[in-house]
Length: 105
Image (cartoon, rainbow, N blue to C red; front, side, top):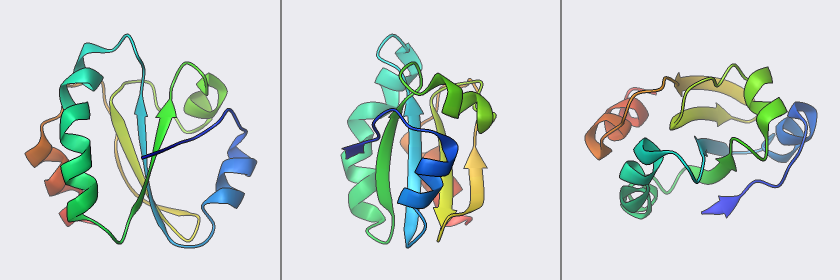
């Protein structure tokens, strides 16, 4: 999974303007993020039409605030730069819950 460097919302939108993207917000200290992380390679493999990008919430705190990502782990889906769905809260997420979110897009 590609890791998003520190950037502004405008820079991020420019980066994801073409194609389908899934931003995965997490942090190294977050136990619920550590819970879902081992499932991420399988989830990525199941959804090859999405390019998954890892966003370190602490490194990109301004971006997270701008996108109203106050809880992690969280996911925001984009299609050609437009947000098409979000699974954003502070709750632990299972592989099945993430798959249900993506399937509903």
